[in-house]
Length: 298
Image (cartoon, rainbow, N blue to C red; front, side):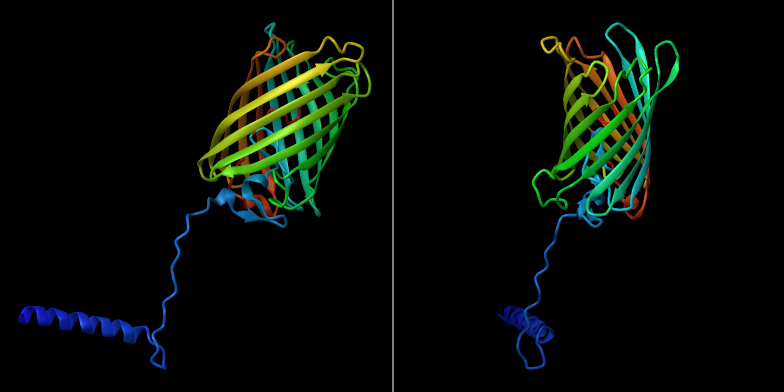
């Protein structure tokens, strides 16, 4: 009994000490604030910039898909390479040099120069393009974050790869499905205004998963393309391609995206790949994240 009484007195002393430590000057017991432990947010999913967009969107694309807009006065210089192997075994290498600049009020302006090397080793200038984007609202205000994208292509009339100028209208959609999972879709309508007056309708989309935060992401991309030539509406070409994607950020301000797509229909090339190396400038270029490429520049 003596041991039990000693134990009981020790517990009362501890309880009294806790009450004294948590009492205010009036002697009233003060309730300590609750502590909530939240999960850690990935760097690439933190919000930044005037439009409160996640960092993985601040480079204007994820893998091969165009995404939203750059933060105002941010810029990116990129070199794009589009190697392709046709069904008859011929190779073509198209290249695109591009500069993108974010403007206030969710606008963006782009300029690109296109050139290529055909299967005979001939280097040719293929044209230039002027592009503009506009997002109607800040990020996550409208579901799927729609962005309108317009482009005019001034094509080299003497190139065998382009026989007329063309305009292009895109609807860009993108969303963060879950932690580490990012999705984007581009719906594209392209119309030649000269030459064969070909009409193209494309849908491309990509899904990526962040393997290493701010450094490495892998995923899957697909491309569907329906092309018809004026006066030959019954003789359309349908292409469907699918393949993996890999995005790597060697430094905070640069990214490398590799997307090889493999043809699944007779009209599609055997392989159509996209390789993008970009360098970012501006306040949002410290975003430390990467974000699909099958539609860009084609």
